[in-house]
Image (cartoon, rainbow, N blue to C red; front, side, top):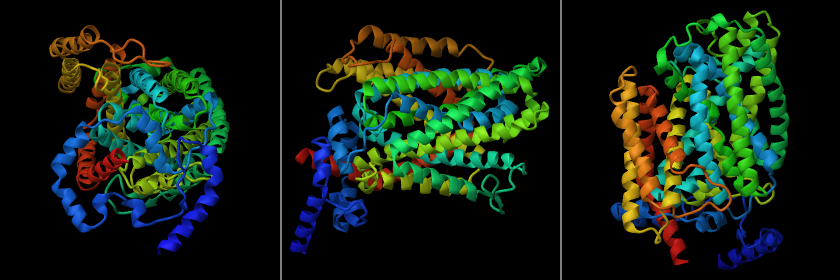
Length: 592
């Protein structure tokens, strides 16, 4: 076996010599075939070599958990060492122009075209436009935080990498699990919405293309079309990142033209009487809807995961992220207002609100144009989603949170094919069974939680540097952060219990102010951004924490039940696999 293995290695080295030269010293290309599948590819860690080693690992759960809880990564490890796990580099081929359109393509989709109608009809009424303003402000605060991190740590891992550096390995795992949940559920939700608009385009009944079964409500309409669309989008993403960018640009340009038509034609057929009553469900309805339509802003974090493939991250990422999200926020508010003025909120269709609204004002032909635009938008969401979420998964696998086989990058395409397959197959299984309303609430909790954690991580990055910051300053930072988080949770709780009351806010809001002012007044910043940083630190990140927690509290209890069940499953996985895999990986790196 030794001579055969040596000859194979020598042959592989000769075959890969050119790619090693091109990659340079950043990522060492391992002389192994990409298409491989063995136990060592999935479980190479010492703890999983045999049952004896695994039993010993389980006996060390306590010490290992303490190690993972306290250990933090660093910029160099995320940018350099972990990338070697992929064996091949992703190709640097994207510019700010690509990222801007990727941002537009990733965000504008099922949220604005579908959730707008649902939330206006059931929770917000015409005030749905204020729901988009509230969630848009919160989203922009998160965009600021993501932009600073993406410039400083330009890797495919996005928020997972940022949290490993600032909050440690365990916090990164909880976030990674939610990222994967967000990825799988989000893509599945868009695929289900794609089918709904496709039926409208064909002028058929809303569920006529789905298979009716006797399963439980919400899971009884099987959707084979959603599975097919997911497979096509994933195939395009696996072939080439740059070619996907071209397709996304063309589709997004068409979608933008149709969106402009929707806004102009909508206002042309506006009836201001449809805005009365403006607040049929009260202020609580605005924020309850804001928490759900936040899903419409989700996806911009996919742009941050493409930093590893961006030619000039420090210039291109701020232009791409901030530029696209600013335009999208304005577009969303205008589209929501046009829908509210075209049709009374009680008559808005839940599945295809814009198409039916145009039909009701005498522009029946326009519903086909709107349906086509919605399909274009959702198609780009699936395209960019298959890119971004696969890159998240790749970096999570690099850290051995999931088997490292999913970290491999194909040497010819420069894309993470294995990770793309994982996300696509998982999303397809969920999209086949689950309805959009079941998916949206769960997705919003996960998304808001991740964005809140990123804002916390940014404050830690600015005010704490390992072995530099005095211990007393670290203690103060922890106390102030706990005050900010606790006061934000209390504000959200008071709102949920008594939306009309005000007494509780006289305590919680000043406490939030004290926590934020304490960081500003008593703690010096330990790190200055190299190129671009979030302005008004600590106020804007602290406000991001508060708004994300507040929107989380505005969601229904069912969303948190599902979120809690998923979190318990994640923790069980961590105790029996993730903890030991990451522990072995980290200590192997230290030895080497």
